[in-house]
Length: 529
Image (cartoon, rainbow, N blue to C red; front, side, top):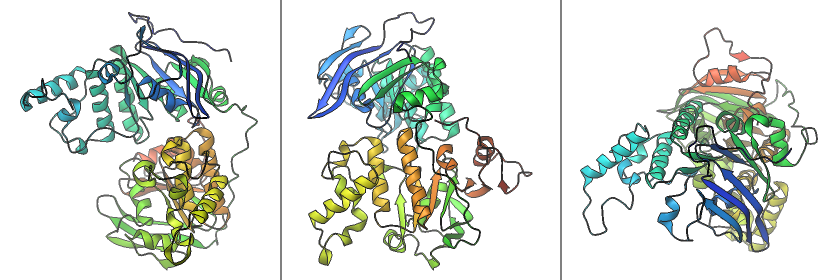
């Protein structure tokens, strides 16, 4: 497809791009992170940046925000050269980034977060709290953010924290905001509210660079898309002129028909032994009266929106919560609940929801992270031999195709998709009988999604049981059955052939009483990446 650049939006007073990067090159030792990369974003535009993990997106963001210096190329903001490296205030006035990991400090109020470091008029002047709250209220009102300035940030929803971060960015004078996977922790309604807010801000001349692996969102929100692959710019085009298959082809370098087909879903025998059985489980404030069984050779999806209780249920199976009532058995033996070591000993492997907070020790190496659950196998008498650690980790690196310079590389140096593979490697290191994977493909590219889902299928093919806890329809499409939850209770069970509308209706509590407990239908592919 021909490389094109989208013109500024109609009605925009100033056609000068809010950011224009050309010929950007960045190397880290022998690794080329960006090679002659470029991107242009117009005022008031919502511009998507997509690419597989490791394509160079994160490196570009670090350069656009002044965290890294490019080795070559030109960077302009509204036609003027980028600020000097290290001039934080100047960079903040030109660009801001709302990261997937919130930078809001939960213990502080909204007002304190909005003006952190700027609470008073000078370093030696006292903070006037009433004035601070008034300034915060004025700022929030200006951008129609309905949040109490006096509220503790830890009491806000995920989307409210994002709105606060956007308002804080705008308070520095920036009219260009980078959104890095902003929908990763939002349910469908939260995404709708976020997009509505972004469209309002676009009307005020604010431009967004939208980074997401959820390609349907690119079509829902953005007018232009730029694709990076293997550290290079591949194309920039109007979203309306680029079909889904063409976009995926640009990201992967493979035509739609050249990739391997997804794993064939096989029929699990009705008499297959139950591996995981959940009976009348109850955790106050999360779920109640939940019963579920997963048989040998079966991959079951546990669908639900943010408040459904599905994540807490999956975490309970892995020993992170002690339910008030009910029982869990693995392989016919009752599990001691609320005890992670007992769950590991019983053969439960967990891929947690948040790889940063729950899944990785980022300052440690790939080898150390991947072998945390099997240290008792890495040396005699409780010792851990480095040679065994390296050998074990290397097998897992090869098995999961983890792209890393070596087992000793700090896991923080890997792309998001490869970090997720390290988390999965750790979960599979014990050869578990049950794998609980919570939103396992969040923040990974389309090919890595396919790889990870196929790896879970292999666990089932080897006689294990897999529970995929997710609100991502493409995660759930790979399952043999899907159980939907709503407000802490099961809301329906779906066999292969369900439609997006049927499953979403159950997840959102909109399934009518006439709906059968088990639903069959024609698969819908409307939201495929």
